Length: 164
Image 1 (cartoon, rainbow, N blue to C red):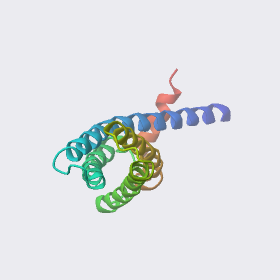
Image 2: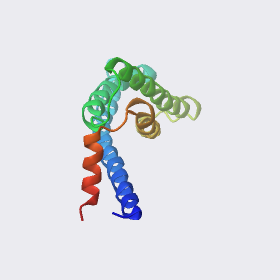
Image 3: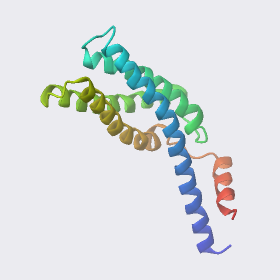
């Protein structure tokens, strides 16, 4: 196999791996998103009526637990992981930053811009979650699930990329 073929195969395997991680991350994220937005609305219009930040934090923590389980045991399972307690600490720190990003946007639009209707609260909650999601995907790959790829996953990716 020539050098160009090896480089091409490596690039295809890398793009394929990132694409699969992004797709799985998206599925886990969609489930966590439904829990987060649904939980926020249930809390904000129910037991925590009118308590914007409290509702957002509670729904965010529950969604984060679901996301950690999904990402650890499915999205990034092919990466050699750290000890569970270390990985969980990093995961929850990254999600804490993500929660602050979303809360910052939500509170800015609610308290500073005065966008307080139910529609605006939901739109801005979703937008804040979106901003935080971009940060989290990068941070998960870079810091939380940053372990080396397991040899089997790497060779399987290369083998799959080498097939026509």
